[in-house]
Image (cartoon, rainbow, N blue to C red):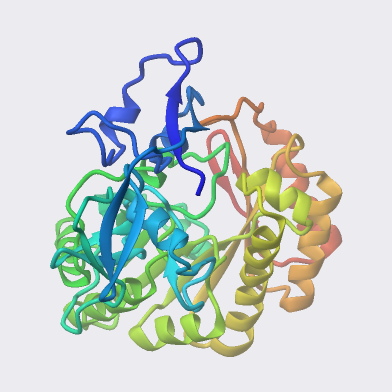
Amino acid sequence: MKTYVAQHNPQKCRECGWCSEIVACPGADELICIGCGACVLACPNQALELVEEPREKEVTIEVDGKMARVPERISVKAALAELGYQVGDVPEEPGLFAPCGVGACWSCAVEIDGKVRPACVTAIKEGMRIKTELPPDYTPRRLVLGFMGHETGGVGTPWQVRCSPQPYVEAACLAAGCNFRCPQCYNWSFAYQGKGDPLTPHETAERLTKEREAHRVSRMLISGGECTLNRPWLVQFIRELRALNTDPQARFHVQTNGSLLSHGYIDELVDAGMTDIGIDLKGLETDTFMRITGLKDRDIAEKYKDTAWESVRYIVENYRDKVFIGVGIPYNGELIPPAEVVRIGERLCRIDPSVQVGVLRYRADYRSHISPPSDAEMERIRDILNEEVGLETVLAWTEYGEIGP
Ligand code: FES
C-alpha cells in the first residue's frame, strides 16, 4: 500500500493560517501526519502536497468483527480502502461515500470504538474496532456554519422576489464540505472547513428557524460547500425544517451543484418539503467541467456533469408545479468559451425556455487568478441568451449585483 505525508513548501506558504484554522488535522495533537490530505485541499496557496512515505510498522485493527493488519499512521478511510472496502463516487453506490475528504460532511461516518466518526480524518490506532454499519439509532450529523440573514441573490430565488422594493433577505446556513475542487471557489473556507461540532438535522432546523424569526422572512436557504453530500442528513433536515415552519409562506430553498441529485434523491427532497432549488451547472463539455470544478478524474467528472444536467430536466418535467427551479451557468472567457455558454442556453431552452437562468460572473478567488468579465460582457451574454437563444428569464451577475431581464 502506498502511504503519504503532507510536505510543506515554505516558498509558497504565505502564513495565512488557514491550515490550522479550518483543517481538522487528525494528527495535530500528536504532531504526526497521517497523509489524509485535508490540509492539501484547504491551502489556498498550494503550499502543501502529498508525497509518498512508506510506513515501516503495522498495527492490528478489527473491522466488522475481523482482525486485520494495516500500516500505522493512515486514516480509517485509507485502511478500509486497503482492506477492500469500496469507496464510491455517489451516495447510492455500496461502500463508503467520502466526497469532501476534510471531515465536514460526515458521509463517510463509521463507528469507531463505540463512537461515530468521519473515516476520512480519523487516524488508525492499534487495537481500534471499526464497524462500517452505523448503529440503528444513529442520527446523521454534519458541519453546518454561517447561520445568517443573507440578502437574496442566489440562483434559486425567483427574480420577482428579488425585485421587491426592499432588499429581500433569506435566513441562510452553509453546509461545510464539497465534492468539487473549483480553483475559483468563492466559499472555499466553508468547502474545506473541518473544524466545529457537527449538527443533527433537528439542531440545524431549529437554528435556521430562529434566524428566520429574527429576520422576519419567509425564505430559508441551505447552501455550502455542497449541501447534498450527506443525503440522509439533508432529507431529514428539510423535513424537520418544514415541521417547524408550517405556515404557507415558508419556503425551503436548496442551493446545489446538482452532481449527486439522482431521481430518487430529488423525489425524497420534494417529499420532505423542498420548495425552491438553485442548480449550478458547470459546463456542457467535460473538459470545461473539469477545468471549472478542478476534478481530475474524467469518469467521475462526466458522471457528476450528466447527473446535474439530468437533475434539471427531471425537476422541470416532474415538479414544476411544486418546486421553483433556477439554473446557474458559469461565465468567464478564461474558463468557458462564449460559444459553449450559448450551447448551454440552447440545451436549457430545449428543456424549458421559461426556466430562470442566472449567468454567474466567475472571478479570481481561492487558488485562481482569473480576471473577471466586464459588466458589458455579462450584459452581452445575457442579451444573447435571451434574444437569440430564446430563454425567457436571464439574469446576469455584474460587479454591482444582478441585472434582470
Ligand atoms: S468525506 Fe469524510 S467527512 Fe466528508
